[in-house]
Image 1: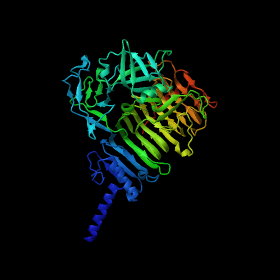
Image 2: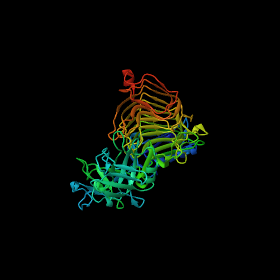
Image 3: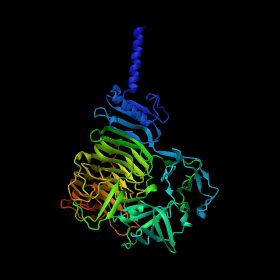
Image 4: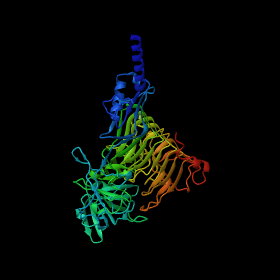
Length: 614
């Protein structure tokens, strides 16, 4: 009898170990007080990560051969960012996998409910929409109304109320740096002085500015517009890029956004301050009694944060969707950028040009990095495979600093306000951006990263000056077989610094990518775009087409391949495009150009882009 009991107990323990060994199960219907088995899953991803951390800390047998965190179908709503740290590291023999078993979404969104047809019409609403507008109260978070700049209705992004249809702008009359004003044709908008939340989007060559308007001075057919600080000083002091008056194709353009009086197109919305009320003009076929309306409440969905001394290591993410991250900073301080979405902290023109590192420099700029839904720094062997990044306000995924031996493969980036995927250092804060960045410890550079077989499309939809893939100071990075399309500026960009000096960038490969439908709204762009000295680098077998002539460009500076200032060290070979529309801006002496253009073989053209995914 005792022998039989021992046998049964041993079998039970073996069965339990078989279920639990290295596996943690999570479900939106679970409970964080459960033990994390498939039959009794946890509820949150954060608790699963903590349990795995404890297994490793206590050297439990479950961690011996690796840990798998399994996410069941459903939406995992984040009230705060997931935080992975060095203590969460796996090893080469015992990595950590965080993977979806079906369709798992890590979301920072909150659903907006209680929609009702607006009956007490607001006097600022256009007459044409009365009886068509629906209203709801914003969710309350931390005892205040949630404020946001992005909203999705049944999975489609709604447009903030705008003066014109999406993408349409109007030419400005004057740009006055001395008085910090922009003069525009007087808009057909009643009671401009009662529009305290209105913003102006300014088209300025290869970037945009988002300026909060302080007041209008109507002077008949023209109106002088002034702006709030800090963006007013930044916009009028920095010389590159500024709007153009008297360009080859006309003056620079603008549009006004974010006022109830502009709510005149289906799919537009407006949030009133301080009441928090949300007004929405439904698209055809949308039933607001049953519509799913989501607003983002969290800016950063996940942060992986290590250091050179203690990196985060060996974590794999697979089959997970990252959705609904916000981007709110322009509502509080505007948004004036230098390039690629990097916003200015300070910038001005030098009265006497020159820095020790660059004798001809005539402007200085200090920048900050745009926000990201998922960020990684101080890490090794961090891999994202078959993941989806969508419905995001700023950057999708950002390998910020000191990330090595990592990969992003078979992923999709779409419906993103900024850059899809960013990699490497873009020295910010107190580091003047034109000074070459060469850290004393080369391990600070992002290196040996593979970006392969990803689809990046319909990104840059809020900050048009962002790009599909952006790599800064990086080395040994391979960007291969990706498809990048429908971006408002450049497609794939590698390099930073505007310098011929050696900085650690080297051996980067841009190979067999398919870039199309780029430069849709801005110019001075390239399907493939590079900066600075990158010895041993290669650009080959890419396919670039459908360069869009931006309707509001003030000249025709957009190219299939653009070697911007001081690009050097590249071998450029067998890149197909429909015409030889290339340009170089003060390139170095070590670039080698071979066969590029429409004569490249059909086989190379057809092989570019995404390969069959596993």
